[in-house]
Length: 399
Image (tube, rainbow, N blue to C red):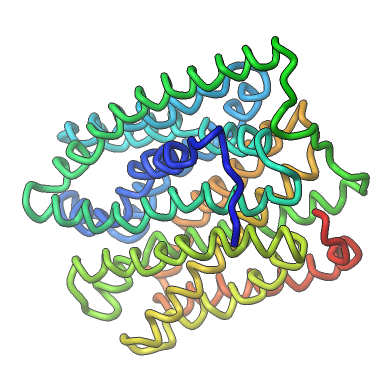
């Protein structure tokens, strides 16, 4: 699997940038058992803590996407790394539930600029037929952060408390974000100089192929619904492991690492498959898998079978991610690409944020099995309906 060069050898920094962005977005869920115990929260209240960040994170994608089509994108990238980390420090310094809640909202607002900004920058540097692979490689950074962060956060929380876990992980992210900002500035200055000298651009203008807008809308609905239900059920995995399976908090955090470890190979695989088979086909297959996988989480006993289901769920969310981004970027025009990406990420985050308290309520009222079963059934029905609507579009391999 060959990956294209991005930004003249700057791939490691972009992967690290994605990694750093997601350190603070990935830290709250694995620390929920500690936060719940300190503030004596029930499942619904625990869901609200997670939603404080995810709701703000989702809403901020809309203005951030609009801004990314109009101002320098590296500003938004810096805010979404260093600014988010500074808000994470404030979460760690908070001494009350309300202050923690407010700072999590601030953290979500500042985080909104990364995803609407990064894919268009990547598209500008690669050939159209390699876009999925490029985006998949970039997404490894976020996946790696979601694997490593829960383990580091729990280790620090056990030694120093959950507040210090926020602070210890945030400080290096602030510094890297500033370094990344200046490095991106150097790249942009070099590209401006090359353009002024009449140098050939690295990638040709890549406008979307003609096609009905209804396919893009249906695709967005399918990808967003699947992501929203996956993320809302993920939010309760640590509590599921502790309360349903009776494992330790450390093992519960490790279960998240199993899920997110799939991103290390599912992201590039999903992007590579989208380049060769078409994004529609990839999305339909992974979404058909998603519903039964969610249902089986509570049906299997604790052991290797459960670990395998967690890996499958991770594959679904990350293969879906790279294929979806590739389809959206190819299907949208340069003037509104970040805006559409902002809508996509907004809807996914907000859907997950709104569903998380609902899933928590269903768990409180009916138990884990019923809540996860309903979530899985909804995803399966949605996929079957959208598969029918996308059938003609799915025959194309160039998008």
